[in-house]
Length: 451
Image 1 (tube, helix red, strand yellow):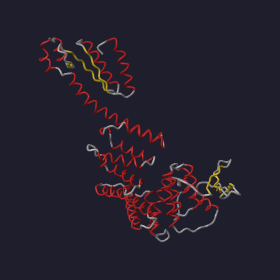
Image 2 (cartoon, helix red, strand yellow):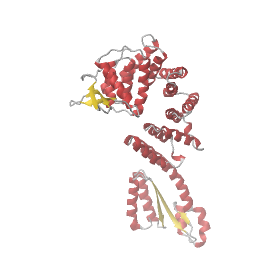
Image 3 (tube, helix red, strand yellow):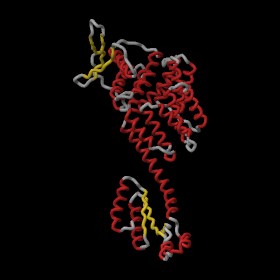
Image 4 (spheres, helix red, strand yellow):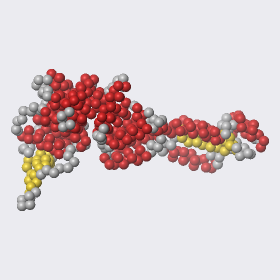
């Protein structure tokens, strides 16, 4: 800034830095001209008032012995005016060495820069979750993770958003490794936070390597012992871990089943939700209870109806979680018509495969353990079709010769059908037939179910 002719250009570049949110700027002025220094100081003060940036104005002098001193105060400037070669020792106590001033300044700038960097990281992670999916999201997360080169920029929000992003792409191994890396850092205690331990246990259970589920359960039980006000989701995660252990045993481990019921019941009693209620009802059916004879199941059914009613009618639901829960409740109530409507709505919302796999687990348990009154009808055939298409969507490979398909009619109506492949050398053929005549069913505004 000592060259007056360059000052307009330099202030332009400071404006450019502002446009990139580069908030911290240091302006050095070499000279003893009080009027110029005061003019520059006033301009910097105006910029600090008018903008969100932090501008630091530092006038300095160079002594005959090549020492650099700041001259920010009036006393320092007056002393510098009478600078003589032998006065370095006298000036030293009055003026701060320029290097020391920089060290002090950079400490303050470091704090504000860290805060800005944390906010930038958090916003970039959130934008990546909104913009990308699958492999593209995984690549973007890898690029963002490379920018986290020290623990000072890590916050609970950043870690949680990274964990949620990995969850969205089912990279449970990355979730586990992230938390375990945090645990190894001596100056970082983020991994001790209950919400981060919750996601860690969730990821361990989903990853399901040898010993993962046992470790996930151990983590959650420790959290519940130390948490003063546990959330219902914590109880439900314990229930989910035991439920997965029960499913791993081909539904033979009744001890895990009973523990799962106990934990889902605690979650449902603490705060009734569709998630905890549906899982509790399904497991009670597995235990042998039926809606016709179980007072607990009937109470759960009433509560599920109430919770669904708050979501509005099926035709207004635009979230696959809500529609999937509507579908599950319809299956529990054996309401074929509503189940068909919900299945078609779910298909149109294109839910991710990982969610369908979770839904299929409950549907298979309902089909296996609930006592149905089977009525052969076009609606029942359509429900069977939708169950087939949902089950097929969760399979990684298919070796069958008969597949459920949807035919889009000229009227834009989806017509359920099956394709059959005859692979015999003599009679190779491809057949397609409709499940039942197309029914123009208007979605009911009544979302209630009779159990």
